[in-house]
Image 1: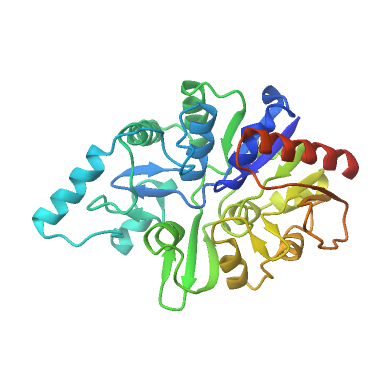
Image 2 (image 1 turned 45 degrees about the horizontal axis):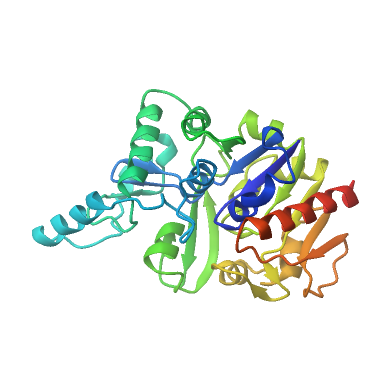
Length: 330
């Protein structure tokens, strides 16, 4: 039995070849929900959906989000209407008082759908309509995620990190903004002063997550701050990880990051943007998988391989290194 902690694109890319190493029926994937947003009344769960669409064989593998060959007629019409009506473009937060009303799960991350700032495909939107409707019928996010996983034919057990709201807020020198605004709308340009996981002090990991954390855990090459950080902010998660065997794949090669804003975010929260910084962020990790060219000297066991993942064959190689590291760490 093995559990993957997944956020962003790093861990989903690793999952692309994990089935050749870890039996899917014995695999749980815990998805980050810190960067979820409510957009135009629909709850969008980007990190959960990347795993969902990948497992269903419909993921847009060029962008590693959304559905391949999806149409965007609704998105385009929303933009046209906003232009025709003379409305300002997005992102447009709902008023402050609306951020703590409505769906509890959508707190602190509610955006208007006027001129929506995230491009949501038409089939992709159908998933969000279904998710939001099931939530409104009274189902938990865990129940809804498993229902959608069944619809997409996933072989692994996909669960969100919590049924409670946790919003990743990036504090910059100019303003505080939701992570999606920082990364999608602002392209990661503002200088990061700090990162807050709003609501984490009142949120809890689900029973499904707590059970999954009793198994061996693999943290893929995801962003330690905004992809894995929200999970670690939940009460009891760090303690659970300290009690089980954990292997982490560094998203860095020494001080060079493979992709995304991990370096800027780690620097912003006071951590060294490097493999050494990742090891400091994961004191509970028992072993690491590093790139074969990464000479970082860590105080824990290391398995080295080519950690660049450009396809399923690469992913299987890195997954095999994770399995080896789990054995070394036992």
